[in-house]
Image (cartoon, rainbow over all chains, first blue to last red; front, side, top):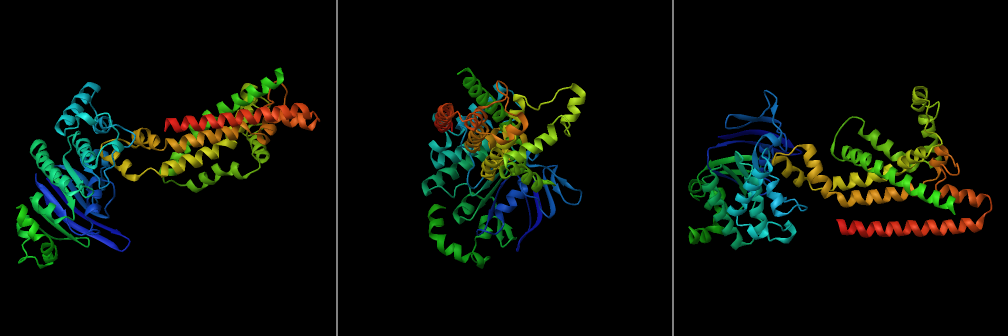
Length: 243
Length: 220
C-alpha cells in the first residue's frame, strides 16, 4: 500500500528509516527530534530525501535511482500539520472548499456540504479560524484534508495542542474517519496513550532510526522492550484504567 | 489658478499611474526575490535597490541614457516611430515609477517572506500549484505589507523631483508637476505663490496618507 525507504542527512542529524503499511493506522512513535515529522514531510514531497524510494499503491512518489520525484500536488495525500495551518483569511467553508480540485462549482459545493455534515460544522461555516476553538479547528483541518479523497492521511501530532477531554473526542473522531473513509492513516505522536489506543501497528522511532515495528501489545510489553519501561511507568495505571 | 490646478492634477495623475505600474512590477519582483532561487538573484536585488541609494538626478541620468532620443532603447523607438518619451508627461510617470519601485519591492518581499511556510505547504499538499498558492494564499496573507508598500510608493512618486526634471523637464502646461512648479516659483522669487502651493500640497499629501492609512486598516 505505502512503502517508505529513506535516508536524509541534515546537519549532524541523520535519518535512515524504512517501513511499509497496508490499509491500517500506523503510528510513528518516539521522542521529539527522532525524525517522525521529517519522515512525513518527505512522504508528502515537502522535502527531498537524499536516498531511497517511496511508493503508494502502484504510484512511485520518489525514486532516487530512476530520478522520480513527484511534487506534493501530485501525491494526493491529506496532510494535517502540527500547527494546523488553516488559512486565516478564509472562512471554514472556504478552507474546506480549497481542498477540492477539478470539480465544477456545484459539485464542489455539494462535497463541501457533505464534509460539513460529517464533521458537524454547520454553525461554523461562515466563521474564520480565529473565531473557533482548537477542537473545531482540528475538525475543519481534517475535513479539508479528506475532501480531496486522498490516498492516505498523514497526521502530525494533530491533537497535541488540545486538552484531555478534546483528545478523547478526537480519538473517537479518528476512529469514525477510518470507518467512513477507509483510508490508511499515518499518525505521528509522542503520546503513548494515543499510540496504544489508536494504532494497528506502531513504528518506534529513535534518533533517526526505526528500532522496532509491531502491534501496540507487542511493543508496549515491558518484558520484550525494556526501553519503554520509562514510558510505561508513567502511563501504565492510566492505560489499564482506559483499556 | 488654472496652472496650479493643472500641476496638481498632473502630479496626482502621474503618481497614480506610476503606482499602478509599481504595484504590478513590485509584486512580481518581490515574489521572485522572496520565493525563488535563481542565478543573478543578488544582482537583481542590488539593482532593484539602487534607485533608493542613488540621487534621483543620477537615476534620471541613467533613464536618459536608456530612453533618450539617442538612448539605448529610446533611439530604437525614435527610429521606428519618430517618437520619444523625453519631455512628455509619460516620462514623468517613468521617472516616478523607477524611484518608487524599490519601496514596493522591499516591502512586498518582506511581507511574502513572513508568510508561514506551513500555509504554503498546506496549499501544495491540497493540490494547488505554485501560481494558485501565490494568488490565493501568499498574496492575501501578505496584503498588509503590500498595501503599505503601495502607499509608500505613491507618496514617493508624488514627491518625485530630480529624475522627473532630468527626463521630463519642467515644461509649463505639460510636465510641470507640483514639486517642479514650486521649485520654479521659489527660484524666481515668487514666494507668495510658492508659500500657498507648499501649504496646499502638504495638506493634500497629508490628507491622502491619513485617508490611505485608515482605509488600509479597514481593509486588512
